[in-house]
Structures are given as C-alpha cells and as structure tokens.
Length: 216
Ligand code: GAR
Figure 1: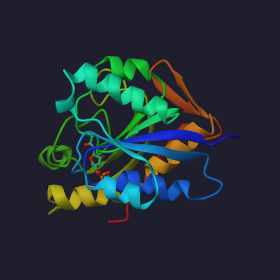
Figure 2: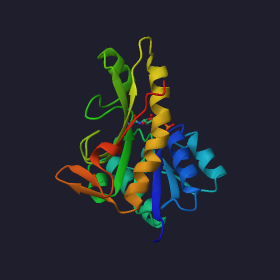
Figure 3: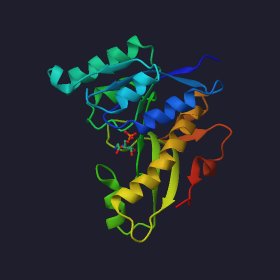
Figure 4: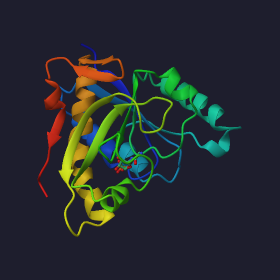
C-alpha cells in the first residue's frame, strides 16, 4: 500500500515533528512526511526538517487578511504537497473553524495532557496545581473545538512530588515522541475508525491504546 502523505504543522522546536521524521525513515513505516509548514519563519524545527530533506513552507498570519485566509493558504500548500493527513505538532496558532472542517477525519493533534483534563496553555502547570497524580499526552482528531475531538491514543506518566512544569513537560514529551508515531502508524494503516465521537483501532483492544509509562 502507498505510504500516507503527512503534512506536519509546527510553530517552534519541532521535537514531535523530528520523532515523526525519524519514524518515517523505517522502510516499513506506513506514512511519509510530505512537508512541514510553520506559521513562524523563526521556528527552530524548520532547520531540522530541511536537514532531513523535507520540503518546508511558511504561512504567516501577518501575510494574510485574516485567520481564515491564512488557513486557506495553508490548505492550498498542503494540497500542493499531496498531503492526506495533517499532523499538528506544537502548532500554536488558533485555527479558523473552516480548517478542521475541511480536513475532518484527516487532521490530528498531540496535546501534553490526558484530555479532556487540562486544555489550553501551560497545561503541565495546570496538572501540578490541580494536584493530579497522573498526567500524560493525547493524540486526538481535531475538531472546531479547541483540544477536543475523538481520542486516538494516550500515554500516562506520574506527576511526582517536587515536579515543576518543566520537569513534568520533559517526562511527558518523552512519551509524546513514542505516542505520535504509533498513533499515526495506526491511522496510516487505515485501522482507526471514528464512531460517535470515539475511535476504535482495528486489532488493538481499547486498553492497549493507552501506554502506561512509569519511567520517571
Ligand atoms: C509539545 O509538548 C506539544 O504536545 C505541545 O507543544 C509542545 C511542542 O513541542 N502542544 C500543545 O500544547 C498544543 N496544545 P515540539 O515543538 O518540540 O514538538
């Protein structure tokens, strides 16, 4: 089967993007990274993508009349690269509702909490301040609602006494780098079905789409 063409959207460091690029180097990985798009020319991840020989594009909000126009430009860029699945990877600009509608069922995000807990920004601090004993990361389909949408997979990590937002973020990030390539593998293998706001992964029992990661 042809490899699924993934377009990765970044705004900054791009470590999740790098994890996807690394995964796609394996000949048996069912997806390839067709392009990397950033809303910021200064995103550090762009250099990583270029070094890996991946086409990069910049679609800045400031170059367009409004959010919707910038999003249409992004869709045009992604289409030009033949993208079949959009993967948000630390893409920190709010999308207009038309964008997830256009890509419905073909756009995923990774978020550094166990959704639906802790949406929005600074979520590791939110988890610590709530006294959560466990946090983690979530790969989910993107809908118009921020940090919502059918969950594909999650990884859990402990929240330890003495954690700062930075130490917890680092522990979660290590799991993000495992989880995102795994979830995109399942999608590329056409094994993920969305049913009534939930997902089912063919051949994977629901419990096995949660990775427990007590590796602190
Ligand atoms: C990651 O932790 C990702 O989950 C988070 O931003 C970081 C990006 O790091 N995304 C969000 O908070 C989106 N709501 P990276 O650029 O190194 O992949």
